[in-house]
Length: 194
Image (cartoon, rainbow, N blue to C red; front, side, top):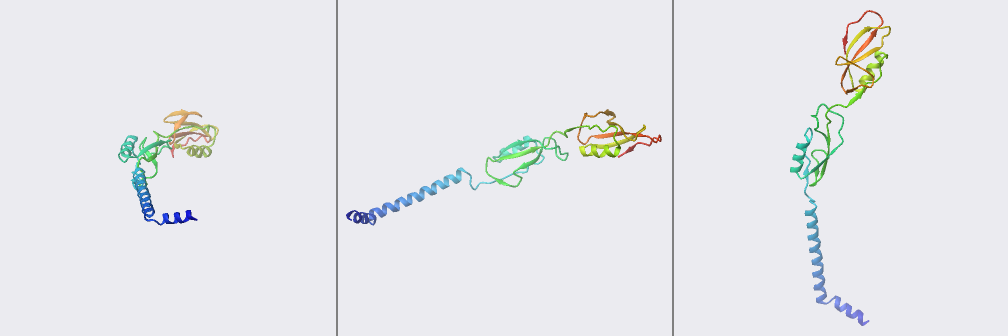
């Protein structure tokens, strides 16, 4: 019982209350200092607006992002887009206008040097109605149509810039392919352009 009386007197003594106030004040000050340090070291309120990198070369991207304390990483190239210069940025993540922290990595996708090459399919001795949609679906353009005497009305040859093509040859996507078609009527029709 004497123990509790002594404890009670100590807890409500002036010395203990002063010590308690000093301890609480120190804890509050330490917490405040720690939070301020964390906020400044993590750039909590600092935000950088992501610039537009569209149509910029890698050298331009590097200069722009270094100036803003940002980094970048190139992702795989996309399909060629003729509206953008070769090897320029066609996509970025995060997008322009977003706010990010210092040293954030911006992911960029580059426009390749040109269209990819596509294999010419085996369409010889197929009808024009079969051949044209297939070539267009692959990304080719249909050029001049010429006719040649033949017992069938099928495609006899494919040509690109005057040279004969064979199945398996590779051409850039959007290349123009000319068709030579058989004319079994014997009335050689005039060449036509599509």
